[in-house]
Amino acid sequence: MTGQVEDRREDWEGPVPVPTGSTAPFWAGTLEGELRYQECECGHRQLYPRAICTACGAEDPPFEASEGVGTIYTYTVCHVPGEPGFGDRVPYVVGAIDLAEGPRLLALLDADPDDLEIGAAVGVAFWQVSEEAAIPVFVPE
Image (cartoon, rainbow, N blue to C red; front, side, top):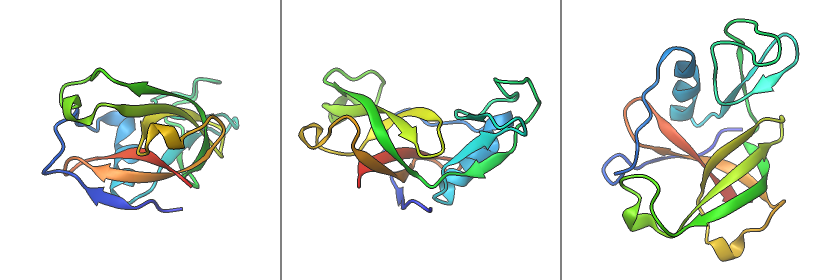
């Protein structure tokens, strides 16, 4: 599945990812609207990207494209900005998302907190914040 990529470069004041080493393929995928996770030959799936498999220690596990869907495991509503550039965003929602493929990741939820519930289905979208990266955010399905 490909998620929509929305250009937020002019308005974004939050942190900007810097692709390096083993994270470069992940961030390249975000610019194409693709959420990527690593799947090792041992069968272990992981996200965020790492230079080694956290299950067996194999180097440079290959990337696979996620369906870009999952469910909300939990979430919190932030009323105090945790990062510079988020002051005008409060309240904003950060959630732990269980992807259909298994990995869990923390991400922004682009939704009204009153419209969210644990276990709800979400899909990925991307906010392009630089020439090198787009941040994955999730929206209710």
